[in-house]
Image (cartoon, rainbow, N blue to C red):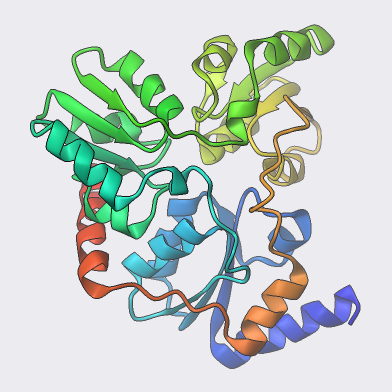
Length: 303
């Protein structure tokens, strides 16, 4: 089946199943092109919860589809590639977190959204990269166990010195690849470009950036900025949206190693097969779902 025919078939199946396709900003270009909406993980989950579609094809990784299911239990959430996982999310599990809670009984658990439903269920509040500071500030606790991303945790801790942080040893394998030398070389190569990076990067990279923010915040910043050249320090998939929305500007990837292989697993073919065969359906234990939803609801409550 050629690309044009496959897209036609996808559209027919969407209509048949009353389905919507959502895609993360890190997905490959052709998947973002056919998506009804693109965005960061939690914004997409919120969108899914508010729509009237019966079926959601979530083009992303496993924890993202789980988050959509937590907020939309009545809907069928399909993950086109069932083995599209997140190494960082897999760096913390329920047993390990329970042990950390026992060792630090006075600490609250702040859980980055890049985590499993079981980990969210054990957390006091969930957060995204864009609202993590407000999430931590909303808690009365002086001690914070931050899971699983130590880099995001250190970025927050620097801005909230009144809190004591216990950092999990997790990290995003893609963002963690960049170091200070890469930033310096990129700046030497493009001296009139400004550097925009994700807070999942190492602290030494964040320190050298002109702007630090989530994928959504990076896109908004680039859109609004009068600057014409940007060095982008996050997964390469974001370049599709940046170039699409800013045809008169130039974007350079900080590192060619900024590729998440799990995010690149979803293809047009896997989206088509997901709708054709209604796979892979995400299911959650109801007790875990409700506890995880509490952590997400507390995050939503802070705005």
